[in-house]
Length: 271
Image (cartoon, rainbow, N blue to C red; front, side):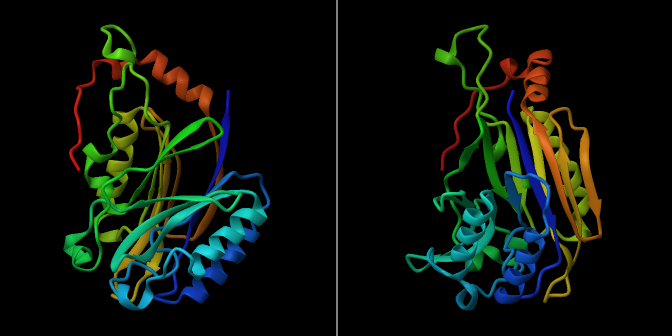
């Protein structure tokens, strides 16, 4: 069965300073000596969660995209995290999925954080990105998306919708990159576990630490959760670089032992 080595980077970020963040993250990535296949960075890793989109936005050939490509190609890994992108005179909180060959996919954050005025600066996405790596299907989402379970819910896809046929799973791993404040961290921890249980998948949440330019404090609490809701990794307060190997065999065994998905409701999402 296929295994998948993932590395979470929980870190403080330099407020609205791309050069400092990219230099810092380069050093952290270069310090990784163990085998890894995917490196996951926080939301808006090059700037912090800033609404100063007009000044900080890049296009898809910008400095941060070129940096991601260079890292992914040289390290032969997949690199992911979100950045501020301008496209067609609109701004997006865009998660990039950069491949080792320099090609990429992307996901635009669907649920904009109106409490923090994100909706006044950014445009919402309307399409999910389910990527693949080594036979794993991976659903990629951003921060506030975590509060809305319908957007991440496994669609009960059965072959011809025949009674008694176990549905096929859309994805095996759910990743959230975030800038989730300490003030509401209980929701972060609770919902990461809930998403794993209800979707019978591994869930990874990568959050930042430190204080941003708006005096908002972040205490990390990045997590890896297995399909039963058991916490495999959890780090509070401190910066950390952690690598863990997910086992497909374990995922398949859990789904086989507890075939709850066959009882799931059918639904469609209108975007």
